[in-house]
Length: 234
Image 1 (spheres, rainbow, N blue to C red):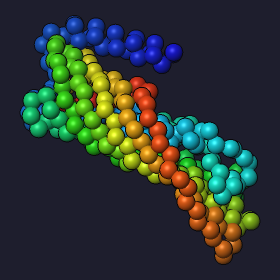
Image 2: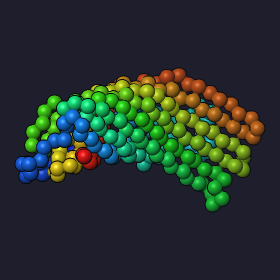
Image 3: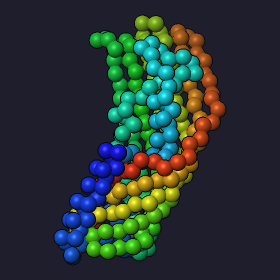
């Protein structure tokens, strides 16, 4: 509920900025470009689904079991992303994005026992603007995603190392609004409706021995949380 109220507050703030600047027009013409910075990562529904699997797993102070789901640091799941827009035609743009994050923690001073969590996401798609008014543009579109999450636990003293990871693909439709408080600067708010499928895998090492495993596919369908990005248009 707090997130929804925050989104509405920011949206109203952006509308007031846009209304105060009558000469501001959305940058959606052929040849226009933009660089954007996302605060919610680039994976959308895919990374949201992956996150739910990790967050729902069993945590332990020791190395997780060979089929366990390690907990993933929440700050990692909020890893920001960077991307770009290029308008092929008026109101029609290609969009792409990248996101990466890594968190490592040591349980002892010597670093013999450590946990490393990492996330990576790649996206690409089409963005179609439906309506442009002073300082505001409503758009829709579609994207494809590839994403991965992984957690590695090491115990140098026991000569043990385990990695559990999830990799998958997703497709999503999107609906968003651009607010222009200034001429070459906009805030974008988006929701995504999509479908994702991913598979777990892992490796357990103990001394000179190692064992790999593969899990069955997991699917996710639904609406991702709203996302916010800052766009610089040129």
